[in-house]
Image (cartoon, rainbow, N blue to C red):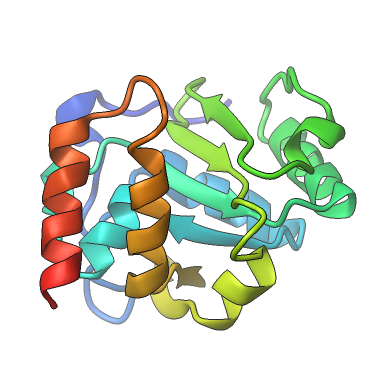
Length: 176
């Protein structure tokens, strides 16, 4: 049976030593492990990326935002990984193989958004400029600062976003 989070205050645990200083909930680590085991092509974006780039505190990261390559083959890997993680997948691979898809994953001990990039820049372009960062036992790729700025600017056009938090991130990201 999957472990459950301990609530908002227990969402993150600080990584230490050789692991990393990036915070991660058990759900984050489990999701990364599932994606790694299924060779999903993904990048970390959103609040965690803002944290990596020095623009957020760990306590201000609400979920894990994962940008996945929008190909049918990669979407099938995402679905296979989530199924093994005991998640009842309610979307088709075709939905995740389109630009700017958003799947909210708020079940069991997972709290993540799975997204696909816009048509431009492509996932391959974003990946080529990404920054490798350790989280748990994994080396993950985080969206670069300039790419994060562009993606966050696009996020402002989506409904139900925290505009103040996004604008704070943009101000910080642009200042460096």
